Image: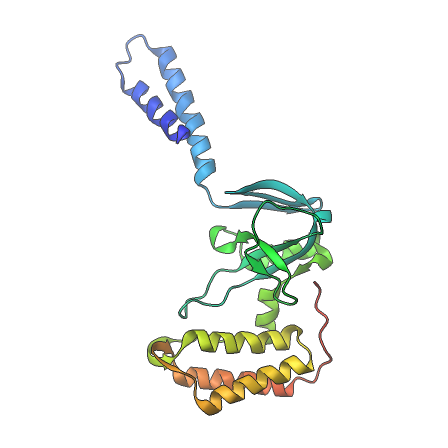
Length: 241
């Protein structure tokens, strides 16, 4: 509020008659510049920096540098879509034992369920997820897991069209996510359980909603995912946590 008041006061001073008011003009311009800079800083998107010493975060509710020693794990994750609309990826942090970041837990580590705080919503920054992941892989090392990228690498889900009389989106999203995670970092039991869930859903017929995913596209996607789970012969994964 104060930066906006400064800008308005400066504009008011400039609007007054200027005869013999050089000093007043200089003061007004200075007030506008200062207020504008503070206002821009307050309104600009989330800013963060990743470096050898840790993670510097500047966002509402959190303005600090977090050394790597205080980080147990970092995860680039992506929430499930909402009614078929993809959600932006987010950066989750699991603090080291005894460390308080200053934010309440807002998520969990996708592999082991540890409580995590949300540091960054990638929908609020210009950096692409791949750029953030590359920087974190370089500086955070084994602390970092690109869950978002790992799921896509394990099984790339095509863009599913939402329309009338389609399969219920939240049901399909959960099925696909379970299969992706089983392929990305699950063991044999997880992959078999995910495949069984897909086969049961296909046999019973996924729930049809007034608006949902295109039925043909979903049938093809679930069939391909089930085949990938059946064909996977690799040993149990041991993801970096």
